[in-house]
Length: 119
Image 1 (cartoon, rainbow, N blue to C red):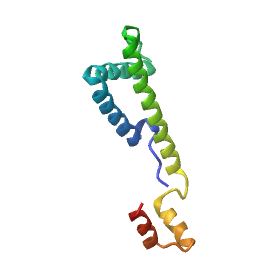
Image 2: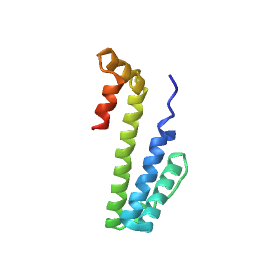
Image 3: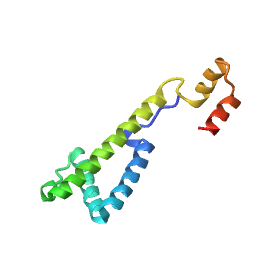
Image 4: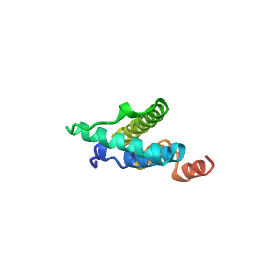
């Protein structure tokens, strides 16, 4: 079985992070996106041992709520990607194994395709 990338290098996490960035930008504009991205980058730097000022004390209440909402959404998306990665790591959790199991139960690929076509 192939080794899966660490969650930090998970392409799903990167994709979801970019998608969330687009949502934040569309929701609150470029200024909210830039503030959120600046705080995120400073937080990563601080986690790596840097003494970064996150600038949280300069946020208004509305900005704080928007910032917290964005990070909460990212956390939820990251958890979903981690769950998906964990499921994918389980033996027999891939499509080929699922089709083989269905075939063992007397359900052939044609029946599966018909069902999926009408789902």
